[in-house]
Image 1 (cartoon, helix red, strand yellow):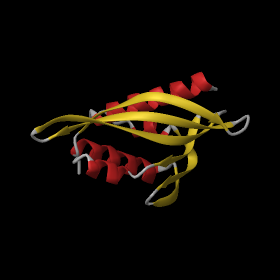
Image 2: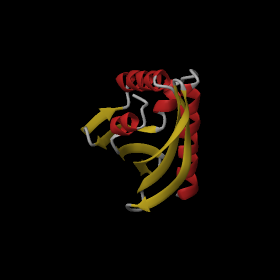
Image 3: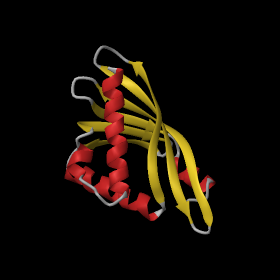
Image 4: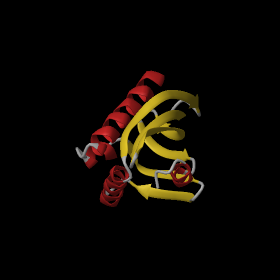
Amino acid sequence: MEPSVRKLFQRYESLFNRSLGGDTNMDEVASLYACEFIGAAPAGVMTGKNDDQFKRAMAQGYQRYRAIGTKEMRMRNVRLSPIDAHHCVAHVAWTATYARKDQPDIAIDFDVHYFVLDGELKVFGWVSGDEQALLRKHGII
């Protein structure tokens, strides 16, 4: 399962960076996710459907990332924790690089834990830290 999951997140990284460059194909981005999913962060838990509303929200998210100066998202590592024969948690270590006015670019490391369905290799959930607090701490927002 590990090589396949690693390829899934390499594709995720590639699509994210293409979207930062303005080449956003929301059908391709949406193809990374299961038809329904769950997300959790300190701000709360949400559920969603992989539909047109999700694609619009993702497009707005990429637009916001561009607006705050996000230049690149790079995957540093993927570590798997199997749940059972069909599911795992992919612990993905990311580095995001941001442009800042009148200051050098800054790279920020963070982790996101993704729930992955093996058969379809789709993300059906994730748990992340407090992105807004991290961005404030580093003067991005």
